[in-house]
Image (cartoon, rainbow, N blue to C red; front, side, top):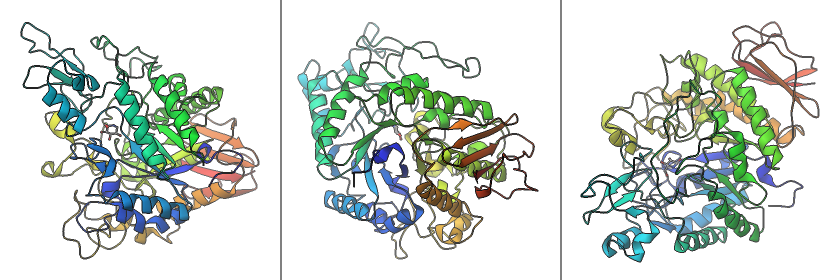
Length: 547
Ligand code: NOJ
């Protein structure tokens, strides 16, 4: 599937399949590979170029698959390795590429290496593959430093022999020691295992976290996003350290050995576009999620700054931008945008919404944001269900919450389950076609009553639906020579309005102000996120124009 002038990943629209919640083929209430296979025609008709699949490897599921016990086996909950191979083949037959997740920062505590490390005891070579240390204080009862887990609480857990091990996430996810040659060699072998099975690349989990400061010093002072809007880079003992790029130089060479433009996308949370660009230099990874875009407020200046800085910094290293509005870790964007104040937030922080939700407003803005995202130069990511306009489920009963964040935060943070609820396909009541009719179990998280209107079946053919907006936008994006990779030119526009052209003959206008705005000269409207009023673009709407 290669041979085009520019590699596919420079302009690809990649659809994120959160496997547990996409489609349940065997009726056990959890999404699986069979479900994905059955929905390939849907993905093809949606018009995406590739799918990124969240971890499908053997796992005790302490963090829903991000705790991997065996990177070469598919978890039976999701299927088998043979089924994964069939999915890759069938997706390719549909013209869809496949990018699994790879999780190099940590393993499961049930991984053979970690079990061996526990058994072998302090000072053993087995422990060297992880980050074990003695504690502080006279009897070593204090953690070795003040690092905190991203899920809450200390980043260290003590084992019965008295040593502590590092886990930047849950205790069931011990961090690997990337200074150890075994770790490098093992991941090279894992990459090759899947590349030789035809995957088109990998999404790299916590790509910015692999290398730790050798002295494991305490953390720098915490920053306040409001007090420090310019967000300069901060030297940090475990995030975004320069040495991490040595690993990716090796990985790039491996990917380049395989035919067909295999590519990496980094989950790298960097303070600045410049730091992000360092991941995607010509001898590094191919692309990285642009979280600065996702973390923007609903604010024209903020968005324009992010767009300009991203294009400048990524362009300087010859890398395409990628744009993303939602994923399985953050509040779904109609719910973020449906707040009176939509604030920018910082890398490696959890987003906390402020004020009551106005979902109609959030949905209007989400439609506009989609047209903005898909008009920008480069590639884009769509998180399953965003094409249906799904809101965050903010009222899941506490008794069903499963994200480790809920427990680890001492029940102060409800975690990420609200954006992971199984998606609705058809029907009037749960499971809305997510599971087959003869399913033996309910979906692993309850779907709200009232989600029938969001289902694929309900929206198909309704020109005003979110789904048809995505289909139309993706269809135009495929056809229009101005869209995808390339550049943009800003047009003069009133305050709060973003307007730009892309050559040949394409204009995008997004109105983030409170007033309707005039449109620049154009010959016709290609697509609008909502109806124009007397030729004006209402607030919180966007339009694509032919010049
Ligand atoms: C980032 C993933 O997106 C998230 O879901 C996961 O919990 C952490 N990395 C730990 O692997």
